[in-house]
Image (cartoon, rainbow, N blue to C red; front, side, top):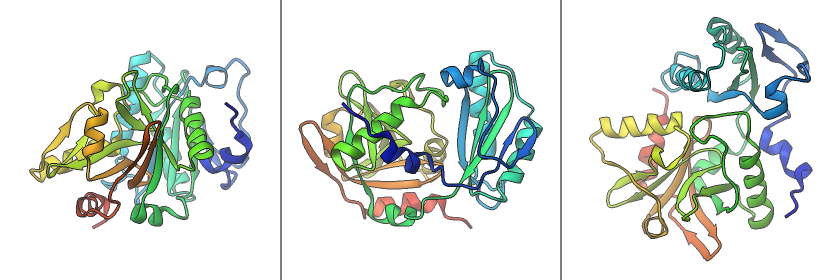
Length: 282
């Protein structure tokens, strides 16, 4: 299968941004970064990163700054990598947020930090309202799915495959039994029986910051959140479907293309409006 990388990578990676970034405690005005040729991040994608949306400030509860740092720390400890200068990371994020609403904080195994930024998608509100098409993809598996690492080739290829072969904006990963896991960029949510369902972390998915934010808020509102394996019988029974991440918040999925047919879901379901309301600023 051919992947016409040049036609899709710029939109996926949001490369059209100001030539400025933060690296190793310095703000650098450039479109290039200098790395040692033996840097494991360069050679193997050996980095930990998180992508966050800044709502006015790092300390705004919706930004979830501490949750993002905690997830990075968990992965660094798991891999026994060097801890970065956390003050430098915050200083860099404060400076970078003056230019971008979306920040990507990356940490290398030697503790060096790298912060880049980008703008929100121009059609985000349209997508939040009307939803997208997604495709179930086979033979693509995220590396170390419980951690957000720089080895991101599988999600990029899966999303490219979905766009080129099915005219889809997202791709859905499955396990060896065909159970749905997550999208290339977010966690899945389905509505049925008057409650929200999401795949459990034990299935091997990323512990999304937005996922935990949504789950916690729903439980605090005395709403039931069902975490169960998403087999084909369950996914066919959902009234509405969506995915979440810290940048797009909640995006409905109105159509899913599978190898056996197409599934459709309501993109304007009342439950979606309540879920999206969790991200509204006071």
